[in-house]
Length: 349
Image 1 (cartoon, rainbow, N blue to C red):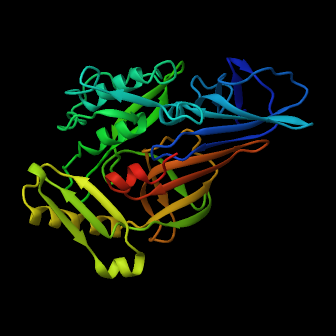
Image 2: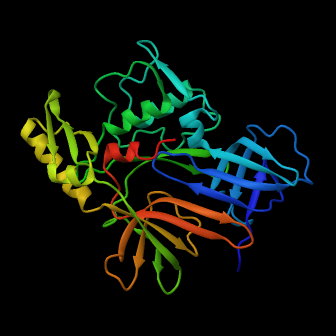
Image 3: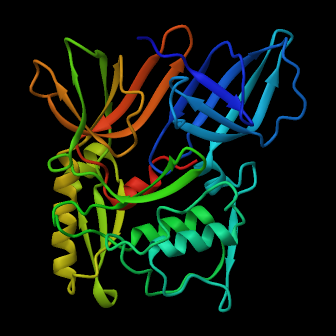
């Protein structure tokens, strides 16, 4: 049974010609673009809520956002909307969302989850971004940085600083960072913080095969870090560089914090393991598929092909859906995600 897409503006269904939904992932906003026929009369559409349902029978949308731009022609009107992550990062327009942290008003001593809640409240974004799923303390997140954050900064800068500090060290070869993403509870957009998926141990959500649902696979080359600075306990620091890789791949910086390390030598050795872990995973894959509409960032899928180089488990990084007479779906995947700082800096808005 074919799916019938549904788009609403302020809760009212609209007749649209075509559209596209893009979820870049990696701390970036999802965007929805769609075309309305000129026969419909619209006034000021700025900041009106938009939802996109893959099928009209769905109880929850895969996109909830707000209109930030329109473009009118003689024939139609193109509407552009971004999700709660866009408002979180940019305030919903050309001005970035900022907070001023002082000795009186700050996030000192809070867990990352509690700090994220307060940052959103201070930036007055809590009407767009709800935090019901992260308000409680999570043992995966830990406590906020030892050095207090002060001064005026963007909400994005503050959140990145918080997410950089607590590293899951169960896997010493590749620390697993915390993932910040947006979900939906059927009524509101909800901010979520979760541990980066492990493709070897986390449950597989979907299977793709050449014979059933893979249309095309594209390889995306990703540069590994070649100059790695590791900061340890008490201010110790060690640097690992790979001169041969720097000559071949250029100098790509990576900086991480690991408070379990107490000497420059231990920091340097940890940097070497980070380099090896990233070197083993220099490719991302863009896959055109026929299904997987509801897959979310950070979920694990499996690719089964006749080529062993492609077969295996992957983590969802992003997704694109073309909306029209026939759906087209594309996903961006890799086997292991980039390490902490590279993950946070790779695709900023």
